[in-house]
Length: 319
Image 1 (cartoon, rainbow, N blue to C red):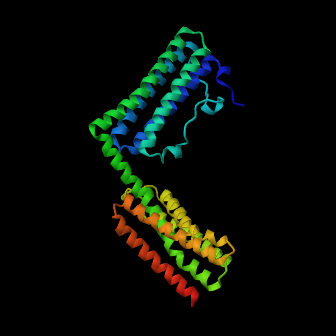
Image 2: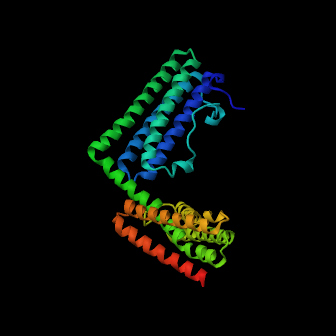
Image 3: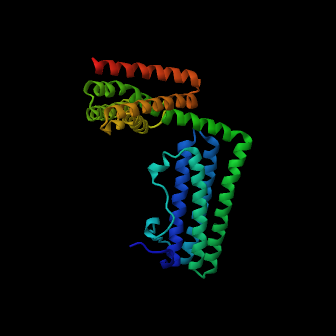
């Protein structure tokens, strides 16, 4: 069972601090390695934070060796109830650079709080002094993170990194998501409304719409994931793109399918048509917002394409 911080001996508190500093340092190093190519200024700041954490670890180990000998027991974060936690490795791999900056500030604040609480665990002057010094340094690190952010803004490095982050977001999230939303919203119009007008039965249209939406989502997801490994294009991890594209494809089709749960066929059709108009408007806005396409041009292209598919579905269903 997990123990509380108050239950730990002085040796265990120091061992926990050593483990915590080592883990935080490795997290900073991993983050710096991942974003170094696209965000060099932030990566350099993270490397500096790693070096600081490594220095803290060495000081803690030296004190532990003086007080308790060479063997350091393994005390992990999860062994202590209520102790600070860190995001899993795979979560850190998908954080954006702005999220990383916020995460660093949170990590430093939590480390400071730990050292302040740990001071009460011992009356040993040397241990209390070191823990107090580390608490003060973690506070300075929190302020340093904010200062580095301001320096990056003043030098223009932050602006360049923000532009790079936006490009990465567009390549890795917006583009596959938009492709999926367009495919799901437009390509499923024909089968849904063909089934609706062929049968005049809401349930039949709903079943066709769900099958088309989920099938298209699976197909588009696999197609996007297998199209590019992202190494040369910078489009990011193929699995992430595939999931985004597949989910947005399914969502685009389900949006105008759900109204056919309404038993009144004509009411369901009117609502579905209204939702189609909203979907096409959203697609046009996204293209304008992230692809720099003029709003009128984006609206015209999307609406004309959607209208043609919509009419085809109605004509085939009414034949």
